[in-house]
Image 1: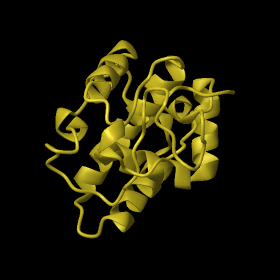
Image 2: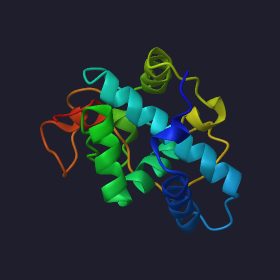
Image 3: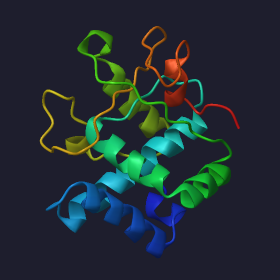
Image 4: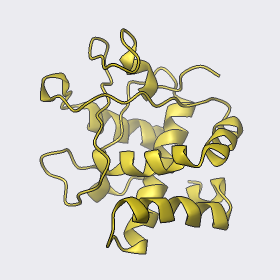
Length: 161
């Protein structure tokens, strides 16, 4: 199992974790580090298994957002993984919620060779951590938001290159 920290330089990792902290005042550095690590695992799994219908937890999504905000790092990360992993957010909507999505995502991350930090992969009703990220991701066709109408589920896969 590869340590996903090596996917970024130490300075880049600190920068992304700093963005998580900036968006969540008072968050401990160790918590932000955990969130970024899980976001990296998610992106690795999405790139490796582009047809898998996976989605991040709301806590891990905070880390994914922070990665994306560092556009040069995110582009390089995706290039190194061989595939760009798109993010098309949707407004949260409980009618689109797939209760098996996180279980499926954790399994795919395991297939990619990583063990998840279970506390950060809790569902929206059982999460122990609150974060600023407030978008949802529908890992099944039919749930669509204004960003990518008609094709919303594809952001949870590896997308195009």
